[in-house]
Amino acid sequence: MRDENLRICIIGAGFVGMKHAAAYGASKRAKLQVACDSNFDAASRMAESCGFERIECNWEKAVTAEDVDIVCICVPNHMHFKIAYAALQAGKAVVSEKPLGMNSKESEELAALAEARMAKTSCCYNLVYVPAIQYVKRLIDRGELGELVCFRGCYDNDRLADPNGLFEWRMEKKHAEGGSICDLGLNIIAVSQYLFGDIVSVAAITDIIHGKRADRNGTLYDVENDDIAQFIYTYRNGGMGYISCNRVAPGSKQDMKFEIQFTKGAVRFCLERMNEIQVFRIGQSGYEIVKSDDSGWFNVGYEELKTIDAEHFLSCVSENGTVAVDFDFAAKVDKTIEAVLEAAERSAWVTIK
Ligand SMILES: NC(=O)c1ccc[n+]([C@@H]2O[C@H](COP(=O)([O-])OP(=O)(O)OC[C@H]3O[C@@H](n4cnc5c(N)ncnc54)[C@H](O)[C@@H]3O)[C@@H](O)[C@H]2O)c1
Image 1 (cartoon, helix red, strand yellow):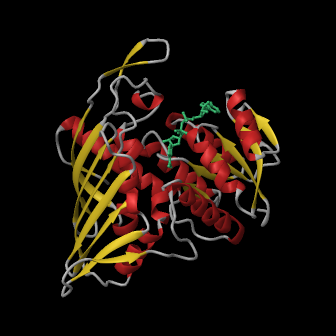
Image 2 (tube, rainbow, N blue to C red):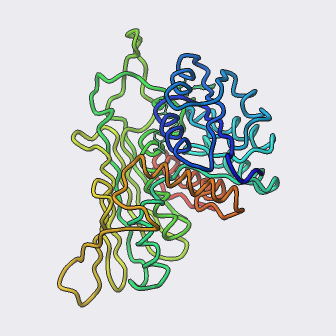
Image 3 (cartoon, rainbow, N blue to C red):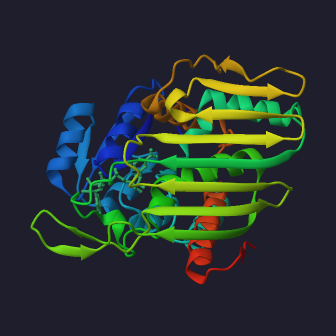
């Protein structure tokens, strides 16, 4: 693998593809090479605004191209598997937007292929790179707060709260395995598994609040994926958790927060104030607010998380480092998503093997 000017191909020039282009474009280690989208106008817009070398509308040509080192997959969820598979087969380093697969079988197959090919991979669970969350990780690793008792988190958003909002690919099963759990919940699952390891049993409820939506032409569709999901669970290493996510929550923007109770203290975090963390140690009179500052990053926002993620991945590719959230990690998140959907469907506890 080249150790400078790693050549980037971004597949999917929608909302998140543009964020990847900005993040990789900002790095001295990267060169924006191929802007790929099946929609020529979208590919052109991304190429022109971010300064790519060339445009491609066929993803199969893009992932096998000689002039590409890293493929970033930013298309709807049902496409992740086949693009990642082809890119790994072609010897590329691969970044996939989340969730990695449509189910854990797909993501485990990708993780196994990546391992066999010794490929660097990453799935975009950007929240683990929040400096305040990295600070919590260090507190946990040093055992300063004792044993985990309970992780309690939620992620709510109001982007789809308007019942007259248009039908989108994320609402149907053939394009996304789940709804709020795949848009929002998985981010907090990833943070919780990053901090505390595997989740092993789950009980859940989900619901669809706005059951029908129309597309731009007025054609009415059934919404098949959950608008809201809630679940309780246990960790393999001890401790329990509760996670709630709602993508039709009026007034909520990036309303992700968690509280973790340990035997010797507690922490509280809210993404809307992502540069601080509240820490309580037994003996204090109340929570202490710590302003986070990690490895030179400070006052970060959503876009900077993409930049931190991109820099981390580029350094792992060029210096053979270990990616914090690789395809193996992503497969474990997919197992939890699958268990949540199954537990809700069967109204029963589901064990994750
Ligand atoms: N990590 C994050 O912060 C974050 C945020 C939003 C979305 N996402 C994830 O990113 C992915 C994309 O979401 P989005 O909101 O950007 O979607 P989007 O609908 O805005 O963009 C998707 C793009 O993919 C293109 N596309 C579709 N099929 C294609 C194909 N066969 N070949 C090439 N291009 C194709 C579309 O033309 C479109 O431009 C999803 O998996 C989503 O879950 C992640």
